[in-house]
Amino acid sequence: MQHRYRTRQRLSLGGGITFPPSAVDGPFPFQTLDWTCSDYIEKKKDPVSHLTPPSDLVLKKTDIFPPFLNYRLSAITDGTLYYEMKDVPCYPPGGLIPDNPPLGWEYHEGTTAELTAKLLADTNPFRYTISVPVMILELVEAASLLKLAANNFFSLVGSSHLNLVFGWEATIRDIRVLASITTSIENRIKEFNQIVERGGSRRRVRLASGGDSSPESTVSIYSSGLGSWDAKVNTSYRTKVWGSVRWVPNRAKPINFADLTRFNEACKVVLDLRTPDASTIWESIPFSWLVDYFVNIGDVLSAIEDTDKVLPTDVCIMRERWVTTHAVGIAKPEVDPPYRRANSISPGKVVHHMKLRNVIVPDSIGDLLSFGFMTKSQATNLAALLLSLTRFRK
Image 1: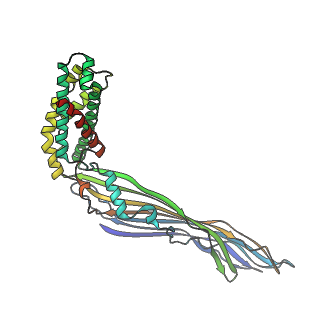
Image 2 (image 1 turned 135 degrees about the horizontal axis):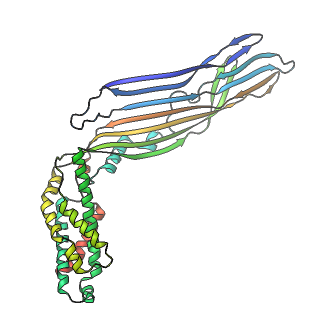
């Protein structure tokens, strides 16, 4: 990549000063645009992803609307004109370099390190919370116990005895808990397989936003041998921050989850029934598939936890900032013996619009990159399910 810096300004002419009887000064130059861009060109596509790499960017555009001064100075007694100013451009309020908010930009945006950590935490497709080997053993046990419970239904006589001994309604709730967990696992595996098949997944998330303003102040907007004029100015600050990252897998082969899908589809059908009976559940839900699935896939998922990672690349933090300064001119008194002053000042404004992109190389992110399937709340539900199913062992 090669660094490139560009700049552009736009100038205009306007206004004039008349000195009797016929001397004229003007028109005067004033700036209406200041634009700069710092970026990179001649990028080469990555040979693996075939994507053009991101790069740092600093883009600043300043639109300038200066106040214009109209002023006529004459004698009170006979109206003699000393000089007259028409649409004379004044200094731009706030200048061409934007100020920082009173508390600084980091107060509203956060530091780059904080923003990077939030970006990776919010976009990582596999938040690691529970050990995969432990999870597999628990799911095998839960599926086995539900299979045992359903099998024992046939040894019972009468629905009242079934509810009394085994708690039929509780069993249905247990099946719903297990179905929700396995469905979530299926969705995560699908997502991971999509990342494997596509070679990566780009994600974008909003990270921060905020605004502030500075107290009103009085500044000079025009000064010459003819006099000086002031204006009341106030400045507002606004920012929004977002980030993007491309997650890539260290794995080339998707995970097979056909048996898990069949189990989840069967659960969906049965659980949609209002009052499923024991025989319907036993014949419809393939508990044996579920047990075999987790036994067979345990080694695969354990290997993912130990070696395979989802890695962040092309990490970018983007900031967009606005600094807007308004100016309202302060006119001089109209009667100032022995002079009469007729004067007005149009409002002025300067708008700074900045776009900044920082490419980050993250470090010290540890477990954030590990592959995981289950959230803490799901693990809690599974633990409660296993605890409730121990009654079937009696």
